[in-house]
Length: 259
Image 1 (tube, rainbow, N blue to C red):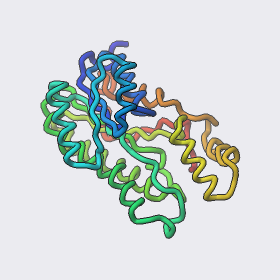
Image 2: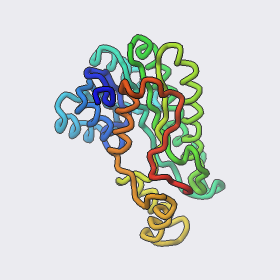
Image 3: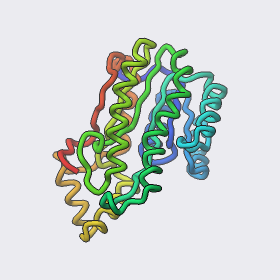
Image 4: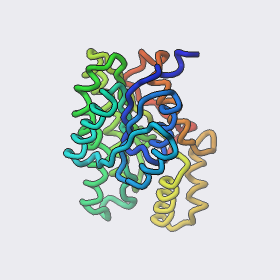
């Protein structure tokens, strides 16, 4: 069973880790005796997390800001003493609507945070990860990275991009002993999916309850995913049992068939 959990003392950086999936991942690694640094744009949420989970380190950073990413990786180098695991979790939901109704600003912002942000973080994390004996990158994508998602094209494009980014990085960084995988969460319980369902319901002119039923009808298990489900897979991918898993896009979604 020891092979199912990460080694103690791993140095882990998690982006957007003060709430939702990122928070669940941060808590899981902290419970597994990792050294955890969490970034987020919400300083108050970071303060609450640090107070609730003693030992977690925090830094305010926007992953779409190259200077902020530079400062964050310097924090990882100094405060963690290096880096073994990067969890690229930062992302936004993006706009909902037909392509010709979306503003260029909203499209660009979604791509900058959800996709370019992962490039910027990995670009500067790579030298630290190459010095690790257990280097691993987990890029958080979405089931929208394997399925078409009408009315949510910027978000889907970024999540498909993350899968290609992941598979390419796995080939590039494999010779350095660094494993790279993507996790594709489905309908994850929490405020974000509630806002997505609400926006789509408004766009299609139906009630929130009816829109939620449509979402869940497309899930074989007919239920939402919990953030802790994604956290559990993250731990496994960094454990000895996951030592030969790389270049994969793994869904945690209850088998979403359509969105």
